[in-house]
Image 1: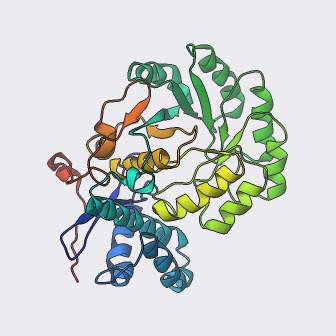
Image 2: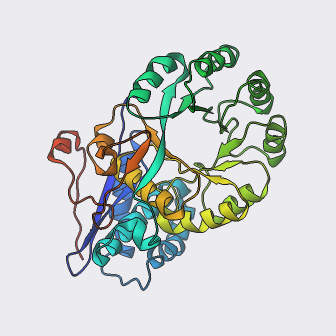
Length: 353
């Protein structure tokens, strides 16, 4: 990746109350402008000037209203991303209107901090990156593997040996292997306490392959960022494959869809850890969602340089021993996009009813 794109969306109601959301645009880089134009030209007419009776209404109504549009062009993903971003913004607006932090609107007892782990760490320079992350307060780290299977088994052992007391290590293969390769990796790291292995095989692999991989090791299997809609999530959760389930709030579901899935995750006593690799609005929304639902999950924080994340939202709050503080401002606590980010702007449009 040579860039870190993001699409930020702001909605406003007739009383002038506004809300911010983020639409998934992490990959491909050119997808950011595509999703923005999809919002403006194909979805905005379903939102502007429309009344919504409940905080979940916008999401479910848009899922239904865009079904044929997405089916016609086969672009389920981009439509899912746009709807998720709008749902985030709608929740932010409603919480701001109520004068409470978004997490408190969802759960009055939600804490103001959530635990985090450092993500986006390439296995080839993991020790140096982890040392820097440790200085920032992180105590858990996720390394990217899937580039060279044979050498990575050895490298994982080297990285694990450098961990300090209480620190944890996870690995993410980003769908790089087939089932046999994934099993080879798991067998090779069976002597260390790897917190989880994420997406070792393609997300659309057969259930037989997923079960074959999961049953080969005691290491928990993680996944979910590339699953969309309630029934596929339910099938995955009930498959007995995953120990960790990772819906991405900006990729599908927003608050509405993810909350419905998280109920099923918890019912099956699995670990919910939000997936996220984008800008500061989506990261902040993920933190509020995690705080609202509770549990032992940790917030994923990409540690690669990204001004779209570093200058926006809860990510700029002080971290202490791997905790992210969200503050007590209404909604997500985001009022404006910092002027410093204007030099990165490639597309900006405004529509009114």
